[in-house]
Length: 319
Image (cartoon, rainbow, N blue to C red; front, side, top):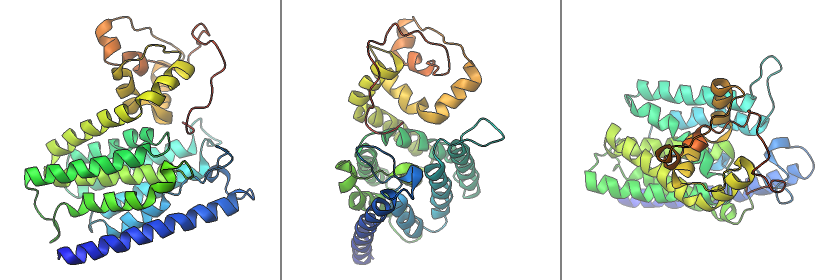
């Protein structure tokens, strides 16, 4: 059995690596001719976005039966997000991509409950947020994915996780690691982007692996570690982002964590709904250390320019 797993992983690695190279070349060819729109954003002269469709396809086929449908549904919804980007419905003030992503998260929760994941289904769907935020600079999401895959394998050994479908529990995080390893070289080099389809796929796949470690409490523990590790990986670029975009000159690690938990388009949409056009100041030292300045920063409020000394510059990838 273990020999056949090794052969399967070698095959998966080759397919993912070659598939990534092919989609990169195809997207560049079409993108430079203006056929891809949001899938070929003008970042550093043009970078294919949504190349994570290859990890999505591979994991949809090779994850354990009965679990891969969670990846399948979120990947489809996320790719719709990649294709439409910031475009809004004509009949309501919400982005098509945000709507599709929200529907995908709800469906992941529902399917998770159907498969018996219980409350872990909510955590699995929630992992989309930190993995999405991690994918804001070259290689960061791949780093988080591979490190958390290794951490999960170690935890499975410690917890003595039970086999699933006659395969060792470590099959799932090993598969995620191999797929990400095959995909990531061009991402680390800043030549391609996972896109929502890629980081959402890895998020749900990791969530499934967390659950297979030992149920709800392991899922919760590893999800918390994922958030903390993502904040640590992104701390340097987040500091610059806070200074230039949010006018937060002295961020704490709590602000980085809160950005990972609540940043991005969906977080700002909820702030718009809840805070309207108001901006609340946070002066309590404890709340500041916990990141409440980031939590309550409302991009839809009327802000003064007192903190901004120059025009904000583009930082890493498009948020």
